Length: 175
Image (cartoon, rainbow, N blue to C red):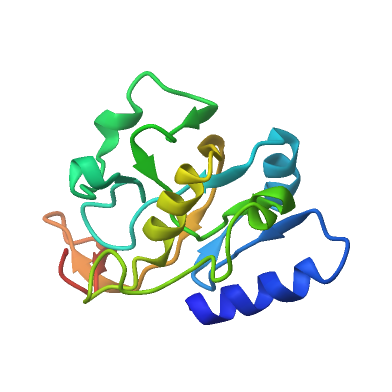
């Protein structure tokens, strides 16, 4: 993943493109998501979305001083619109929109695996740390949200009254 993102950035920087948008293949979003993010006109922004597995928390992490703790909904309580996470968090790369000057202000490679955790890629967390150290700001946009596709199973269920219906259940156990 990191190698592909870096290759894409190198190509984009050979052109006059002013933005770089990263989109994962397991998301669904409205037709106007990109326009909504572009209108924010900030260094780095990601739409709010949730983890693929229960307990379906926001995909946001604390920084190194918080040992990369995953945030729960309490972090967003009372917050709306554009939320600046520069001081205390990192963003996921799914849906991440990056301005050209950010990429030009950082060294290649922008994304690297294994720098935070040897078992997980964590290229997103490390990218955010590097961007923060370079003086760029990070935002999650709660007005622009997207869905995270997760495998589920549909089970037939007979209610106490004898009527049949269905139940949606996770395929995988929670993390």
